[in-house]
Length: 177
Image (cartoon, rainbow, N blue to C red; front, top):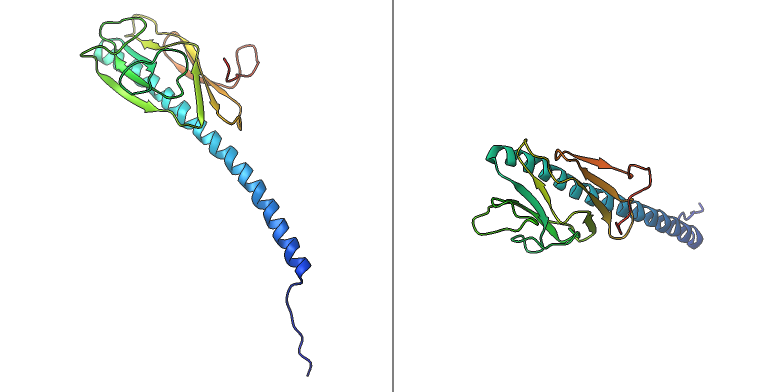
């Protein structure tokens, strides 16, 4: 009886490994895009819900509530770069630009993910009770490695946020706004 050996040749093994490496590379690229899209969505959701909460708190407390960029979670940093984080606080003295003063309660703190760039066309957003209008403006949320297209979070005069994929004229958002 003749015994026959079965197995793979070196060529078949190398081709299988090469194909596996290509597929893994494609999957890794797709996964990083998915992760970037998720990070962007998390930051948009955090701002979206904070603006709704600020509107609600201003009505319930009958006081002005402001959002501003913050690097330490205690005070407003100024400027239009919100990438380090932001705070929401009860702006009792209604100062402009808003600043956290003694006795003013910080209602929310948020640290922005390091992989996300967050810029706005305002240094702060102020939400007031229903009889006065809010600060309108736009946040642009970008992936720091530009793996996904930027999205905008537009805040109306009434304080209602909405997500936008392009400017009113149809041109896309950019991270250098």
